[in-house]
Length: 84
Image (cartoon, rainbow, N blue to C red; front, top):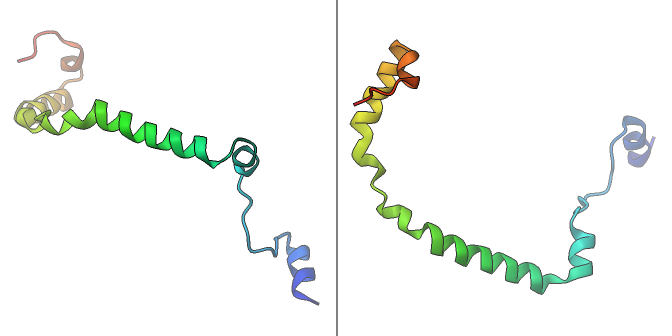
């Protein structure tokens, strides 16, 4: 039995490539708009999210851990308004 017949019998494909589902879209539109979109997405992400490095989320770690312990002890604390 040949390799192709065995693969056909097992229900597997013998071709070594994977079809790209976006290939017809890229072929129809072209690569320039997709590259432009990717660059624009990167620039906008950098513009709007670059300041997150100064967010100082680590400043409130102690309070966050204390709140997590209180919530673990009593779930009603999660919905209460009298938090520290």
